[in-house]
Image 1: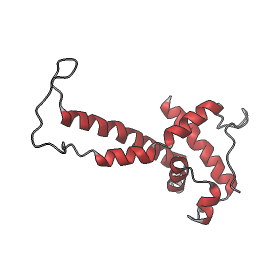
Image 2 (image 1 turned 90 degrees about the horizontal axis):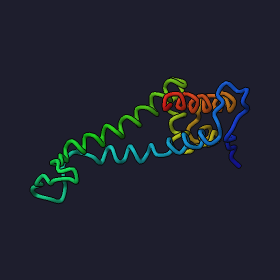
Image 3 (image 1 turned 90 degrees about the vertical axis):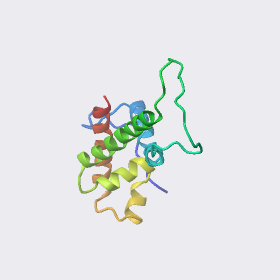
Image 4 (image 1 turned 180 degrees about the horizontal axis):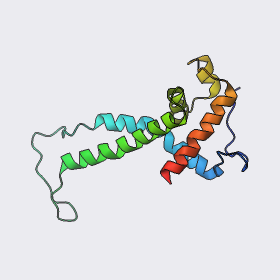
Length: 140
């Protein structure tokens, strides 16, 4: 049976985050694989049409599909970079493990048995909490 982290730690803990904020940040992180997939699928080329004629949008401005694609790529890349940067800021040597744990929901037991994470459970969960604490500060 796997160990799950409690959604709320003691208020005396230096990495305390309110329970609902933790869940919000956790669900934010779980979107990471989707962001990567969508980012990689955006290539700026309109598919399934020979010629794309600019259309007037609801605001009577000519829509620019290349600009829209670029804006979407920026949106996804900003979120991807944020999570990767916070993982590195949490701990450079364990950032890959932390990123996989928070974005794919891997438990410590999975990381230890399958990926052979080079730290003990206490260190890992301390870094796990630190990751969400830093993400909370970064997201504001």
